[in-house]
Image 1: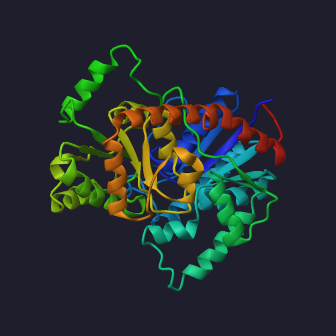
Image 2 (image 1 turned 180 degrees about the vertical axis):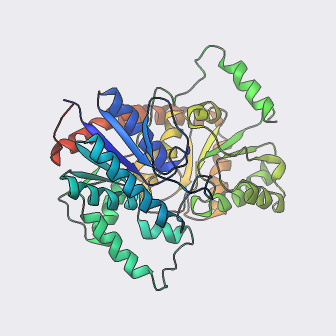
Image 3 (image 1 turned 135 degrees about the vertical axis):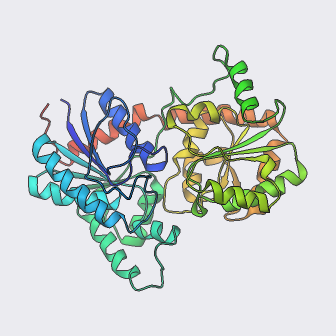
Length: 401
């Protein structure tokens, strides 16, 4: 029987990046199985067709999407908590599926008031993310108290599910989290949408038109990135690596897609003398991301965070693109022997790996085919979502629909 699932998303859902994509794909695939999903989220963000979204009461001075750590989240989360309780009382869900630590805290409070089980969808360490965003000083006064709070929040829900096995290992080692109640459902991909487009009727002509519209010559190789633009995502290092690549392969273009730091990174590219070969189109709609990814010859994922997942890598794989990334446990977990690994944090090493791949396009195509096969076999959301439903059942959700 189907479940009524109340998802808590303490973010400006939907905003075309990271955890938003996981929330969206989980929701869509739960709906495909016949479950009903309601999403409680901030007052701002995009409404998507077919989704049941309940927004918290907002404030007029925040209209843009809130990305990463922010002091504004203190009162935004308080308003979201009240809205979640109101929706839960009226909607009467069977289970609460909470994202991020703030969502887990809200979920536990509402769950205890109404006697509902809570699944915490853990997507990275709260305090580590604050440090990555330069919001929290690890030597500062608030670091230890927030670490203690994070430890408590982790253990309050009936189950915690990580988006990578590396994250589960991190919880065991850093927080002494017990195996009981700890599960992993790795990030997935919609393999029907994200797939090689070469076989589609008319795609070569559309691809040529897209490249022309963006100012990319037909015969120029393209290194592609899609995600948030921020230092912890490795964008500063990527542009330094791009400078090294362009010294040897000046015909190459770097298509760096995402937001919010477009102006900052355009200025950095200009200072490095590579702005003519670095395209920064800004925010890309998730629904059309596969078409732009198909313009790439090589994909890059230079993420510096070691506790968060990296769903973009799985999207690249599903598109049949060879992937250059830093040598981190999460990247190894996803790509295995099919990854092209640069020394962590090294722009020089990243440039060498990119150059090696650009010089061997045929090898890249074969590697891309293997990665596509791996994505379909291991990372399809149509398979992953059954693991999520099994966890609802395991933590005691009562089917009421």
